[in-house]
Image (cartoon, rainbow, N blue to C red):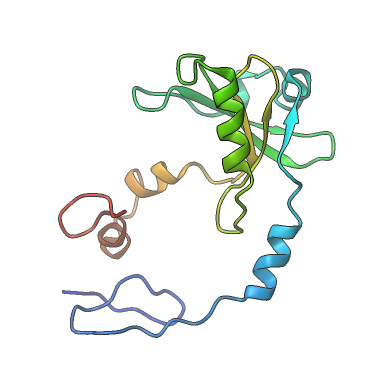
Length: 165
């Protein structure tokens, strides 16, 4: 069972198709977008307080739940770059050295299809800084959309009802 797809909106393929021909990505354009990102760095707590208006409630993008012990704030740096600041409680990463090492390691990864990490907070805080991606969160788009699209749902969740790796 499948659905109709067009060149502009490929979403799923009929099981009768044995192979799909995909257009190659624009590698030249992709690398230049990634090169425009600043290198991963450490921010001071004062810089991030200023960027988020003191971690104001009106700047909260998403709040933690049982499985995600964090709060995400939107903000703007002095250079007018829009950011998302993810604030973890200390129980999520009790060891500050381990937090910094993991943040630096993941922060080196760059891809124009991801919200890249721009930095973290120095000291005892557990704050990660990422590119700001507008239009809500991925979870809201996948699970709380108003219009049910079976192609997107089947692609993301899969035929057995579990998230695909």
